[in-house]
Length: 173
Image 1: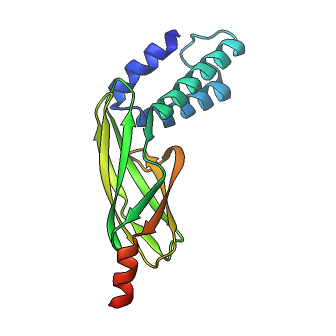
Image 2: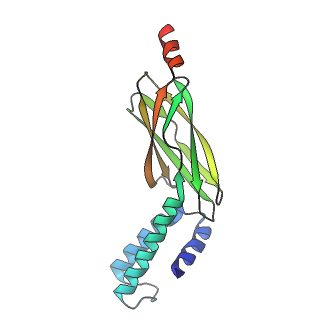
Image 3: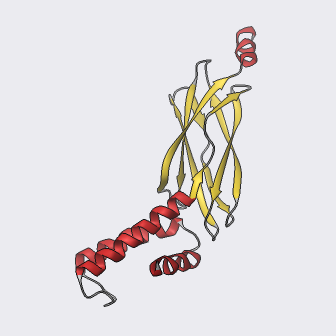
């Protein structure tokens, strides 16, 4: 796909995959609204093909940068660290943030992780400070973010539970 090479080279210039997402949508809107500003496409079919290829590339980029943590975590105390791993399968480094939202929000609070750079083809483990009140299970919903705060990819849900020892300690105190 010739456009994929062009888009991937633009990733390096833009400083990572996250910056490309909004640019693709803006360019697609521009092509639909006013035709091709560069004069490269002479028919609407050519414009549509380019947009389809660009969007497919953008989706593959979003799938290449993702949260790989899943399942459940047993927390040893009310205030604990939840380990999260993010994987970057691209051949360029990316900078992302991580939103962590508790469900139910009145019982679970977590810190948001600001911009973290993940090297090309690397994984990065993060520690998300989390507070869980009560002994029932709860959820932590995780979402990758661009440096400007826009969502990337799918929401990942992790089940949280307090360990038996922390429940007993809470009752004794």
